[in-house]
Every structure is written in C-alpha cells, then in structure tokens.
Image 1 (cartoon, rainbow, N blue to C red):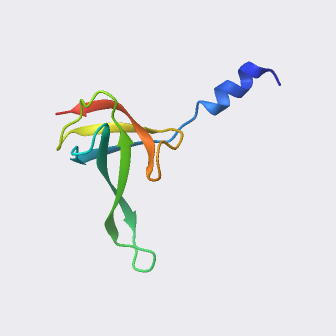
Image 2: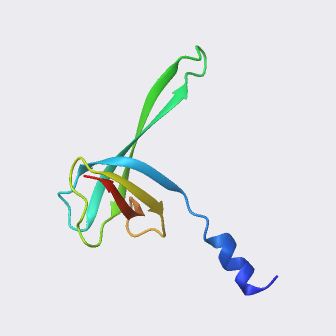
Image 3: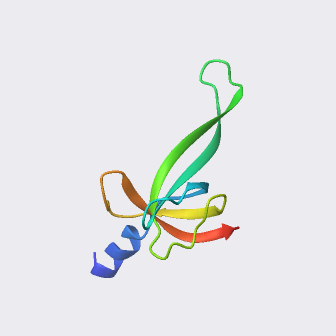
Length: 89
C-alpha cells in the first residue's frame, strides 16, 4: 500500500450540523446538535441533544448561527472539533 492510499483513508472525518449556543470563550464555540431517534422500548421518535465544543480560529460564528463542524485532533480536554463553515446567520 502506497503512502497516498493512507492519506485518502485518513481524510474521512465525522461532521455534524448544529446551532451555536455560546461564543463567550476565546476561539471556542459551543454547539448543540439535535437528532431524532426511536425510543428503545416504545419506538416513538424522541429528540436527543448533544453538546460539542469546537475551535473557531477567526471568531466568525455567533450565537444562533447554524454551523458545520468537523472532527479533528484533541485541542484541549473537551475540544476535538473545529468549525468548518457557517451555514446560516
């Protein structure tokens, strides 16, 4: 296997779309991601939320923006995502 094949496999990173809930920290934003899953027993569709801390180098995302985040190397204890793009303001 050549080295170029290794890079193409390493390029697969998780992405999530969510809403910014806080931008008070320096170069860090807090994103809330909502997903709809069936209840394990009753099979009713319920909403689940997850909170992610993401790196925002330029500080372009503001509270209420829909953003796309991408998985990256750990930058701190809880921050292992980075802002890929702002989808809507």
